Amino acid sequence: MISQYLSAALRKARYEILPDDGSYYGEIPSFDGVYANAPFGPVRRSELVRALRSLGFDGPNSGSKHQFMVRGAGTRHLTGRIGR
Figure 1 (tube, rainbow, N blue to C red):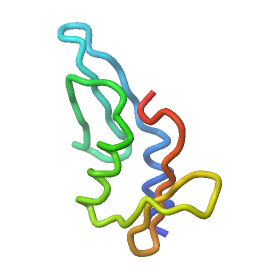
Figure 2 (figure 1 turned 180 degrees about the horizontal axis):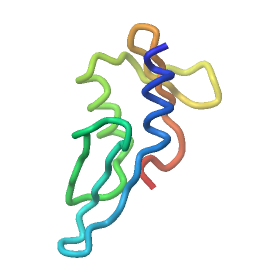
Figure 3 (figure 1 turned 180 degrees about the vertical axis):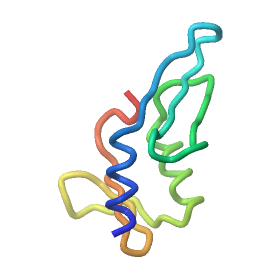
Figure 4 (figure 1 turned 135 degrees about the vertical axis):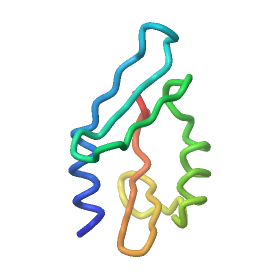
């Protein structure tokens, strides 16, 4: 249930490239104070897997069209070009 809520919120996220330094900025409008700013663009798959593992996800696992990672009842599919 909470993963569905977070997924819905992330679909509303806004991203932009800041003109002053070319860094990427993202925010989730429904979460006051939640934003990110970074000097890089799309994330490599290996970096995403490492980050998800550090958050307690297991995997990647096979068994569907795309590999996926699991934490409790939450599942994250690793699809296509992440971050583009």
